[in-house]
Image 1 (cartoon, one colour):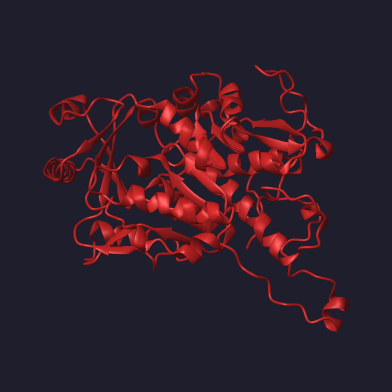
Image 2 (cartoon, one colour):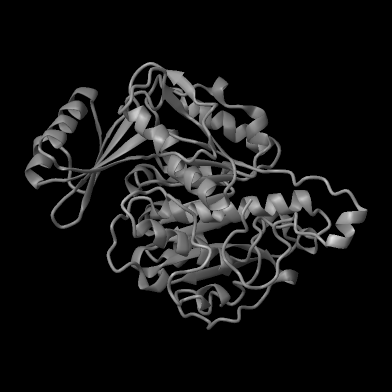
Length: 434
């Protein structure tokens, strides 16, 4: 596993870098690997620039997300293709993007549960999905099904507003027996999206997700939930508050989803409110940057060396150098917050906002898995004397997640094609040293 984030200071990571003299005297076991598991609705993202007239003709509310029947979806696709309006087709899905990005960043294994067309033809949606997924993502446990994968049309209006049209295909037909219990319980985290909880009657993906959650909770594997879209959350916010409280360890959301969940517009305060239901929160807030929030042990808190920031909670980043912990693992838990503005002010030209949050979550998952990896291979390290949910501090996770989100914003695809550069092309190396 690669070390999460870029740092100049000396760290005992990766764990195979040991004292050369001791290595000659003591036979060291090979490092034990780790992985994360994800469950997703396997689909392909199709981006196109359209006029409002087309949206009206297909009854697609502008700026909203709508389910399309297969016949309408096929007609829409053929029109977009024949008129040359398609500007990109990418492997998609919130969790598919996240586990792919995780494997690119960590150069390590992840496992994806979902469905895959039994018959795959060159150039088909299933073919595109496989071609655009990292070889480090273990797809051997996908359930074979008859029929096409899902399609998510991202229709971009002249003013840049995005309208989503989703054709389900067979993406919700995952059955619980295809969830491998040993893989889930041996993983560093189970990552799911809110979309999985809203499958239609007769589709099995919701039950499959709940089965995986129960497997994870049996052995205290962290369950990570990304909310996906505010339109889904605002239909029944109380359901999601109860669901998070019962099942979720880490919550990822943007400011709009935070408002739908908590009723609070300020992303800092909505992150604080969400801590009543989970142990850690990652909130992306567009041009404002992103926030991390969670718990630390009062006796282990570390004050920041950065400027104290004003906000709805005065000087909220005072203890951002602390490591995240589960609230139940703290004798005297305190709430800790961190914030960072967009990396280098954001890209000069934002090519794609679809997937930036998935990239930020992948960075957090990398740090969480790195903690498990290090704890397994160096159990005597002082870092693990009192335990911790992640390897790094709230502040460092903010920087890493922010940097990965920038990389996604600066490209067309929501999936990374390479990890972060070993040495930044810009002169902003002080970013990693702060």
